[in-house]
Image 1 (tube, one colour):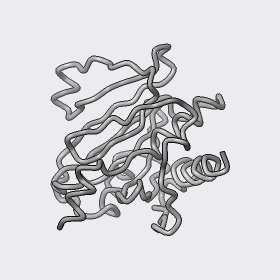
Image 2 (cartoon, one colour):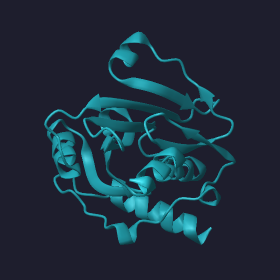
Image 3 (cartoon, one colour):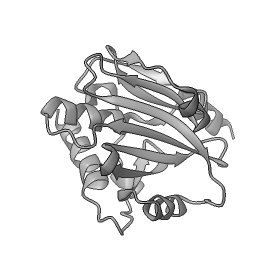
Image 4 (cartoon, helix red, strand yellow):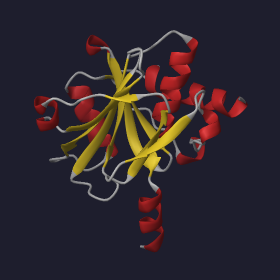
Length: 188
């Protein structure tokens, strides 16, 4: 429980309290690796072919993706059965973006707020908010193909309910490299 509180406080401090015009640096020494016991729910690991995974609540259901969402890069959606929380996973081309700092500046330039530098279990990333559309998220360069940026969006933006806040923090903190990617990186 102490570890979960530290994890929640660290993520909340990094993602939700950063000044919009600043990129907060979070050193790797401050990163707390996520484990299943950190989550306030019984979950399952959802791996993605893109080299990362996240820990979803077991009772969540898949949500259909529209053709427009698919064309925009979205490839996975899930949410709580009661509709209280929704998660989306997708990608976009990196273009001229080469570093996490470039990514942070780009997200700020197009209107995302509270942009903060994060370490997601060894994956350099940024966290951000989108208040007008009621979601928050993280973005990071594809672990094996840096020409792509992966993103995970979670709504609602900032639930005040205790379990929703803890679930959201655990979902975002669980993002990390898949075992396949970990093995591949160890062998290189």
